[in-house]
Image (cartoon, rainbow over all chains, first blue to last red; front, side, top):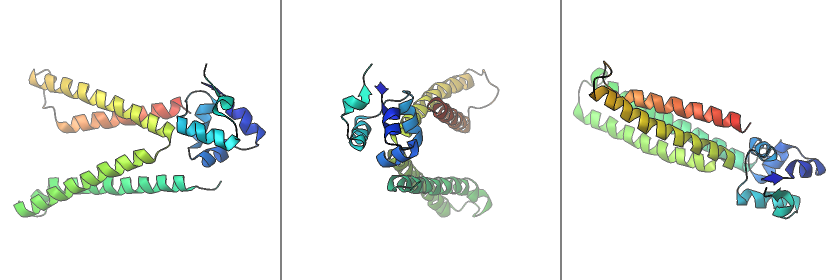
Length: 63
Length: 135
């Protein structure tokens, strides 16, 4: 699954650790999602969507 | 970086797991060697030590379940993958080892401790491999 997490994080000027804390996962999880090695659960996708005030489709694209 | 509640709970779960695991190992040593070296075959104390060990074992299982439930989703995936591999290797390796013993392919008895060591090593390797894969 493709995602715009790294771009959104850069736009919000936050680190992986900050985002990880905000959505209650480890920094490694955010890193793995950004590198498209790991697909997040629906629960985490909603948390990220809420955090960035974007729809899930604006963050994640199914390839 | 501010440590949030989720991370504190994770640490607490890990400490509980360490406590129950340590207790289980100590009580296992007690019930195994105590009868021979401490209370010289007293059956009542042996039974007490046995049930103490069983109690710690149950506590360790519950603590392990709570620890896994408290992990974040990537860690859960790595843990579940490692558990699946360790279980598979344990069943296949264990039965093969038993067959080797029955058919006298090996010159010693297939002890349960070998199986425990095999499962533990497989689990640790799988955890490290999983961590490296998602690094």
